[in-house]
Image (cartoon, rainbow, N blue to C red; front, side):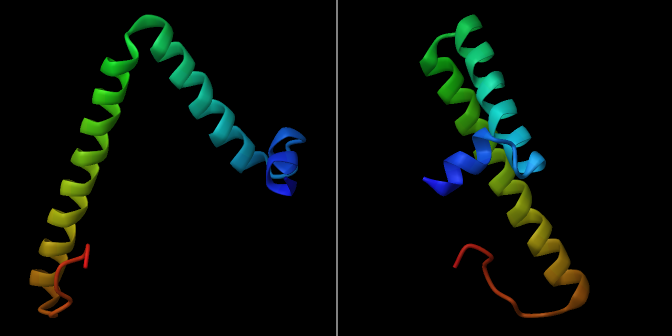
Length: 73
């Protein structure tokens, strides 16, 4: 309850801004597109971010010649 209260009263401006900004963008997206479409686009965005992170870690492992392994293990 204290976490929600601190968000509502804007005690940490950065966290509150991110939460309410993401909520506003989600509401605007749902008002223009269907819920299924918005969820599909968010899923594609999440998948693209995960693939980009995997490629980044692979390149950094090759450049630094370390043996860190798979980043999602």
